[in-house]
Structures are given as structure tokens and as C-alpha cells.
Amino acid sequence: MSTDQDEALVRELAEPLVAQFSPAEQGELFDVLSEAHFADPAAYTRQDPDRGPLAFGLPELTVLLTPVFLAAMNEAVRYAVAAAMAKGAKVTTAAIRRLFRRGRAPESGPEPAQEPPLSLTPEQWSEVRQIVERVALKGGVPADQAQLMADAVVGQGRSA
Image 1 (cartoon, rainbow, N blue to C red):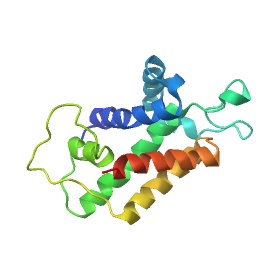
Image 2: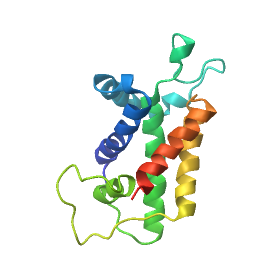
Image 3: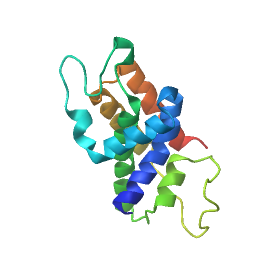
């Protein structure tokens, strides 16, 4: 997978989660925030100790979730690719898409029948959950919301 494919895949996987958790960030704002995130992926880690990395304005609007979900999905995909490759599995964009969207209809036509599906063990899904929660907390998301976000990512992948 190329960097452009990786970015497109991460955006595709993060977008429904952003829509679920922060509907106001959908559409054009998601696109703008995605461009900014991929232009400088480490930006969300540079924190003002009093405000958090993506904090702005009023306390009710403390954290933009698009960059947090993009960073979390990027790390989750990286982990899944490494885990699959360690088992000798062929890793493609389509395989990762199926892994994180199990149970959803394919959006771009039928998938190759000869390609075996990727899978993660319950322990590996637990690690994905911890990765997402850790990234969300690092991104300034409150702990309870970080847990919900992590559950949503894992649920997205584990749903049958």
C-alpha cells in the first residue's frame, strides 16, 4: 500500500466514526481537517498543558475529533498490518477495509474471492482498543469518550 492509499483508507475508516461522535465535523470540515492532519500528522501531539493539542475556543468545543480518529485509525491499521504480516498473510487495502468493516456491504464492488480474509485474535483486538484509547487520550479526549471511541473502532472491526 502506498502512502496515498494509506491516507485514503484511514480517511475512509475514520469518517463514519467522526460522523457518529462529532457530526458537526462531517463533509467539508472533515476534508479540511484530514488534509491538515496528513500534512502534519504529529501536530496533535504538540500540546499546551492547559488546553490539549486540538483545543480551541469555548470549553464545550475543546477537541476536534477528526484528527484524533485519523491518528487512531492510522495506528490501528499499522498494528493490524504488522499482526497480519507476522502470520504471513497477504495485506491489501481491500483486506484491511474488510477487517475494519466486517459485516458492511462493500462500497466499491465485489472483493476478490481468492483473497483470504484477515483476522485478529481477541488479544489483538484488545491491543487495537488500547491503541485507539491511548491515541485519543493523547489527543486531549476525555477518558470516558476515549473509551467509547476505542469501543467503536473495535466494534466496527469485530461486528459480524
